[in-house]
Image (cartoon, rainbow over all chains, first blue to last red; front, side):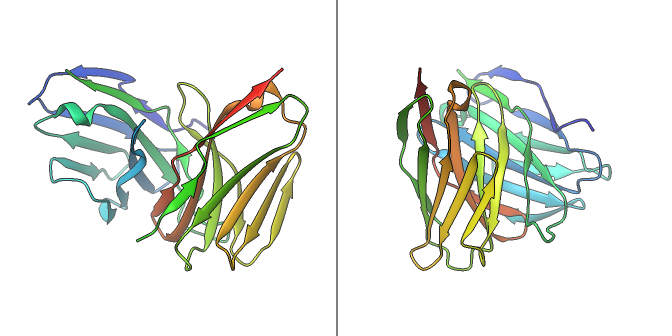
Length: 115
Length: 110
């Protein structure tokens, strides 16, 4: 079974631009969540989508948005980029919570650098 | 809100046991997890424990949970250089959202 795929692997943007990151979950997984990882802030939860609906949201400004398609693929968008948005963005997919809880399967991430 | 805390660094000698500690604040945490992150990669689930359990063993890994003190630990027996990585503790009490600690960087010296 293919793992979680994130594209692109690396991105370099300048302040004020916008960016779209893509995530393809493991086949059969309907939940996709996004995390921002930085050396200073650790792993911060952005949002989670389940069956095309945003089910959970973290404490990020409205510049960060996402969506999920009917095939469970997800995209996240960051508008008006700031230097502080430079980070590793990780996508994770999971099955519906069951007896073993929510086991997250992570992609390798998209490393975003904002200059 | 939920908070998860871990010590940032741990250094051990190859062959020794490693113990990584974690504390959490959410008393309604249902599941607690340990993830491993190697350089340039995403996180990989290592093991997990349900909140009504005290201990779980999985090969070289032992998870201990003290629910009263909200303390979780991961013990790695016979630590190898390949175990060098960042280890994250995480809790989940809400479907679709996990809260992670800042990660413990484990360095294994030969």
